[in-house]
Image 1: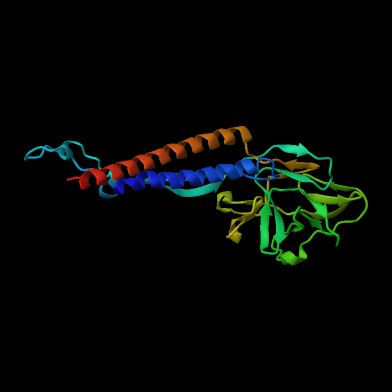
Image 2: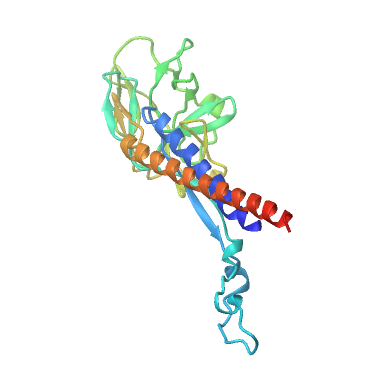
Length: 269
């Protein structure tokens, strides 16, 4: 019953897909969330040993001589990897001057206890000690000038407790019309190398991947970027994935039934 691995591997891969889609649906209303998707890979024995020429055997014929499976009975499916869809989400007004939405491929630079992380979640506030922080209390970092190497711990943005706050589209903060600091919005040479840490934080493993100059992304004060999850489409995909999983389960049950009947019937002889 080695062929049982074919539907079993498909079931494992399909279960992983259900989990990913369910997580997308659960975060459909999470500010700055980017949906995930999976890439499947089908393994075929024929890809390893190559296709053989079909010839007529010079012997007594048997069914195997005419029906070449090319190793398909040893095929299996697996999850080859996952990726994040960074497609732009809708910007929604909030009437909060400290909320900021991004349009473009940029991300805010955030200092967390685990180091610098990047996020599209622009729900900001002022902490008790007067710094601009995100919704988890992590400091939002100010922009670096070319060649500047200021430690991240010294790049917090100290905000005034009173007065009018305005933010330009390039991230420059003004307090009572006086320039204060510029929010660090960075882009990446290859954004697909970022990896998630939680729902809205991303890790960049290569410092050379960060693009600080000629950033085209714009900051929109009083807006937040909604999740780029299409809830209706994801629910449709979730239902479809569940049905595929149930079909695979039925195939496995049939294999089990065939094995049981084979063992019982052979035992009678």
